[in-house]
Length: 329
Image 1 (tube, rainbow, N blue to C red):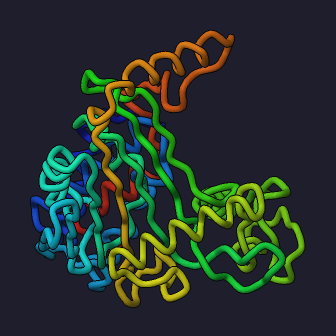
Image 2 (spheres, one colour):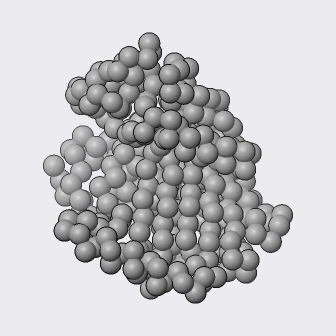
């Protein structure tokens, strides 16, 4: 298994995307996200996704030359129409205006509509927090979750991410999690590896618990905490679709399918300027001290270190190397 530097990962990702039709600046934005995912061990959102990106660029399921359009219909509202392109460049175009709106108004929303899947939400909320704002983000996805007690898929894994600035350009706290017990990618990776999944992750098409990843993919993932996770998933669905103009999860085809209609997903972010409360830094410090006083306990997101270089499986590196040469996935 080769060890590959993050610079190499970013470069080869950009080459693969441009070879398959992405504009250079768009490829750069997506490549930075892939780099970050690999650096923190989030392989589901890293090179694992590159083949799908390239296939969908070739078929037009994602528009590699789409120029996002930013608007601000109200002082605290920033909207970006991704034009069926990647979410990363759409976010990059809208972020400066959203930060400015939050600084002026105390809070602001950033709505990304008609976008490709954003993969890792924490990648985006972290950028907001590093700019000094508290960030809450959510998105929807292809349908894989039925209501508790039901069998028909209605919503996606619908992740939620939350990032808190430390006041010095860093992150005091961050979590990024699906509203299901596990992310869909872990099911598909288990299937590819010929492995079983733990009971409690999913149910089959008849609503029965299963450890077979294929049966899980034909059935439904389980919401975290049952009705509690289902409620958070619905909240993400309502905001991600309703506030961005994107489609509901039930109308999204499988995200990695090479062909088909664009994802047309939405990502919705709430930005909060912590300086509006003179108590924020002190309360954050007190909370962190209370948590850190416990052996083995920490604020979510603390203690995470980026690796460089990283291990990349031989088959994955061979695949992405071929994609960088323009070979079809």
